[in-house]
Image (tube, rainbow, N blue to C red; front, side, top):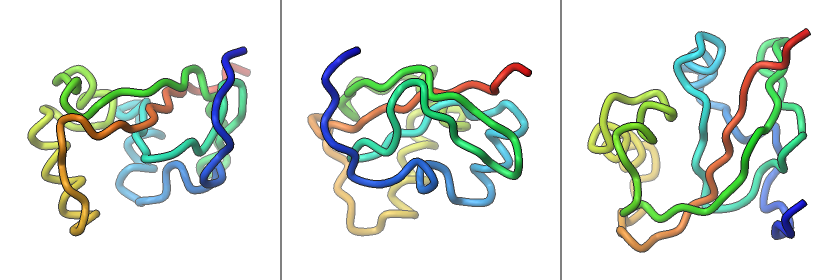
Length: 110
C-alpha cells in the first residue's frame, strides 16, 4: 500500500450533492476530486443503501484534467466540470498547478 496522508474529511462527505449521488447511482459518475483525502482504497462508501468500493486514490493537477476525467466526474467536458466547481466553490481559484486528490470508485459486486 502507498503511504497516503492523513484524511482531511470522512468518506461520508465524499459525495453529498444530491445530483452527484444520483449520477453515481446511475453509473454516470465514478470519480470525485477533492482538495484532501476523504477515503483510502479498499474503503466502502454507501449511497442510498448501495455500496461502492474506493478503487484508486492519486494526485492530479487541474491543468492535467482531460475530457475523459470530466466524464468520470459526470460532466461532458473539462470546461463544464470547471464551471460547476466554480459555481459550488465561489471563492476557489481554478489554477492549472492546483493539486487535487482523485478518488475513483465502483459498485460493490454482491
